[in-house]
Image 1 (cartoon, rainbow, N blue to C red):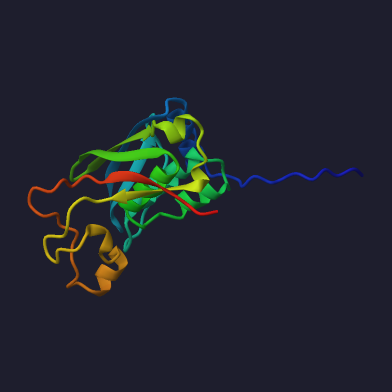
Image 2 (cartoon, rainbow, N blue to C red):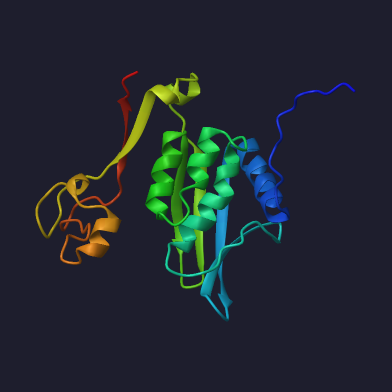
Length: 197
């Protein structure tokens, strides 16, 4: 009997297949709108739901973590081939916060920005970053993108990047809360840093 060696692809659930299809559309148009609706659950409060053509692309529930970032990460990981390092990195970000998902996607050439937010919805705009490094096929593995927040903290006067992480803030409630000084621009800029080989 003749056998051939094949690499098994993981079996995707129906919801994951929908998320993959949604991301194929985003890839085709180099971006798009992502609408998140918060639906009431009898057990877990409100849960985020991302849909594509009325079909559910997420299955997020529970409590004690950032459900919005979990919903975004569980869908947007399909912008990359399944089981690639980029896919695994984005998929592992669930619960880590929306800003973390945004900064990691920026490292792969995608800009995710909040366009609207309310008590029962959140809207995001995903777009492919246009620029010399991306348009000319620059090696993203050799560059790292970081978010640079302008200004200093209103409480301690330190640069924003020198603050404690969100996890550390939970254990140290007296720590600074990332508040901008009056008149400061709140939107971060993206800088490319060369990474040593």
